[in-house]
Image 1 (cartoon, rainbow, N blue to C red):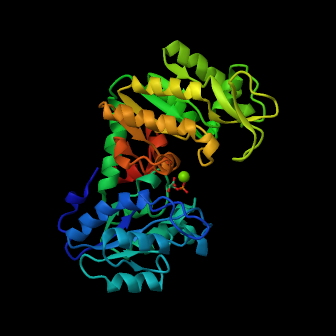
Image 2 (cartoon, rainbow, N blue to C red):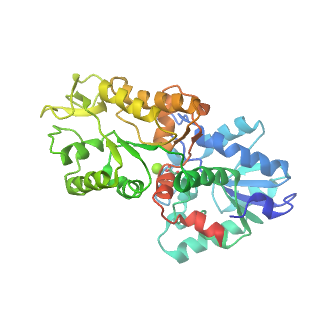
Image 3 (cartoon, protein in one colour):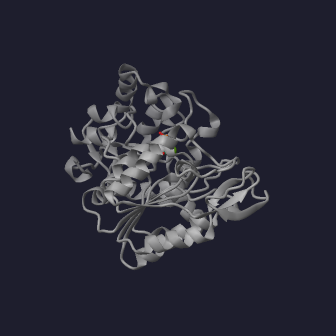
Length: 400
Ligand code: 3PG
Ligand code: MG
């Protein structure tokens, strides 16, 4: 993979930098977790220090190829300016008049942010020609391209994939770091290697579970997806999230794990509520005795302690997905316990990686500092697909 150093002298050059600035915003447009913006700063600073004119491009949310105010990157550009301690110019379009004027106004070391790439249908088009046409327009803005949006390298999109075929290109520092960490997990994890998976849907994680059954020593499962596992063991799960069509497949995973000697740790108790709300009546019940009128919204205290103990015995831990509906205080304890166990085992010298948008936001929301873990990935889907062994278009194109 080519890196920024391979690009030669950048002084006076215009660099198109793809970052992942896809951060959560509240209804008032305030950023609720700026982790991805902060993670983007070192590469931007490095390019500025080299005297480059930095044109940052990124997406926010999933607009459908037309501008929508609520998906504007302007608040993100403002946050970036605060973090950099320097003004950041903002273009109100991606490849139009505003973008061209803004880039023309840049001096060496200056930074501009383009409006949301996904306001242009060419960015995410499935049609190679349409994406290519947009990538052509983007390429005219700059001399070189740096790919630093790790969270989006699994997308075959114009600013991630097609652009790298049109300009001299290199990976940015964040992509280098992320790939380095994940490579260590896939190639030579220190054992025992434990993986904690949560989140709502098991159908989103099938590929990674299959891959991990051949790599990990321990698989701890929580979150909404766990009820499909409990159902596969023959338990009633009440009104909990359940993907009926995946039960047979999950039963296969349980058998496969047993054959391979991979330990799958499932909760033995859950917090079961009468509805999906913080003030719903809730109680701790055994995982094999969830009442028909209740839904599991967190792993229970006995499970949290067992998960923490298992994590504490590992030398390498990868964690993706919350253990419960942690945004609501009554269902946050399981996620909190897992985060704490990761922090504790990190302090004992283990390598711990928190993967992804939601898990990263969860640990920060629960009050953990970033350096409590070895690495907090900026890529949710991207890190899972990497561990799954998939070819990520945005990385593949950097090799060519
Ligand atoms: C993410 O939030 O996972 C990345 O920014 C990619 O966004 P996407 O899933 O909308 O492509
Ligand atoms: Mg996502």
